[in-house]
Length: 92
Image 1 (cartoon, rainbow, N blue to C red):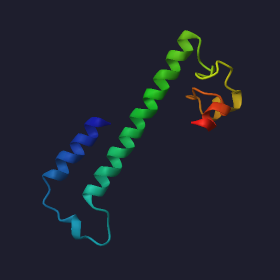
Image 2: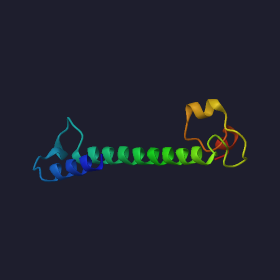
Image 3: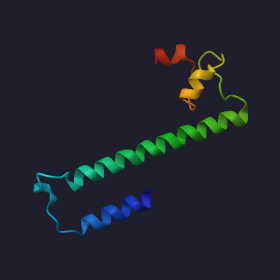
Image 4: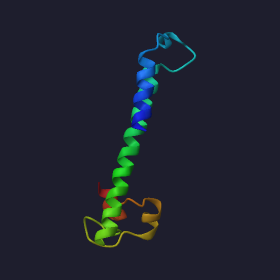
């Protein structure tokens, strides 16, 4: 993904198209910002998944980081990367 993003930025940097004045479309800068944001969100989610896998390996998956009680199955189904029970998630 990062290579694709870099290639996109390189290609648009070399372009002489003036999209900043196109009333019909988004600007290249806006689209770059959107793609960059999506990439960051994907990185964050992958980090959360890596953390969840580490908790599985150590036997801590499904255990609240705050109180040590089990995280409910419904919460884990809705958010498999959850690190807290519902009660402590609400307090954050």
